[in-house]
Amino acid sequence: MYVAIEGIDTAGKSTQIAALTEHFPNAVITKEPGGTELGKEIREIVLGAKAKSKKAEFLLFLADRAEHIKEVVQPNTGKMIISDRSAVSGVAYALIQGEIGKSDLVSLNNFATNCTYPEKVFLLRLTQEELEFRLSQKELDGIELRGSEYLLNIQNAIIEAAELLKIELIEIDATQDRETITQQILNNMKDRND
Image (cartoon, rainbow, N blue to C red; front, side, top):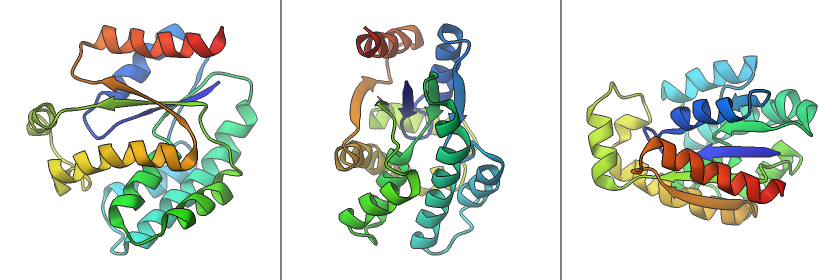
């Protein structure tokens, strides 16, 4: 089973992936961007906000995604794969930029992934108040410096992106305690495995 944990920065993706690792000790844990050697370099470029062109930034995400599917996902088909972000994020960021049409976003992602997508995507959803509090507690990267309104727009775009890619999206209130969130994810994964 291939699943992804989605959410804007500070939503608790890393915390939940660590918790899921305890429940699935043999799972392949990965991330987009940055789940491969090439992806690590691409991730640095994207997080450093080095690309001046939004199209260039999108194409970097696509290059990472193509490499990730070939190097991580395809060789581990049949195993539990848990990814920190997925194609859904890439499409969501591109939707916000508004420079690439929706049909092009879908076809370019289908090309990069060979139509290989997570079976389920879990969106850890934050309120504006909680997001602003969490951002105030850390040093911000290039994406986070764009502000809470930008990040909340991304959160909404994640929902639209999942619909465009025809991926099952499960929304979870990320303001709940960690254990409750983990249990909700596990319950939804169990439903699929039964």
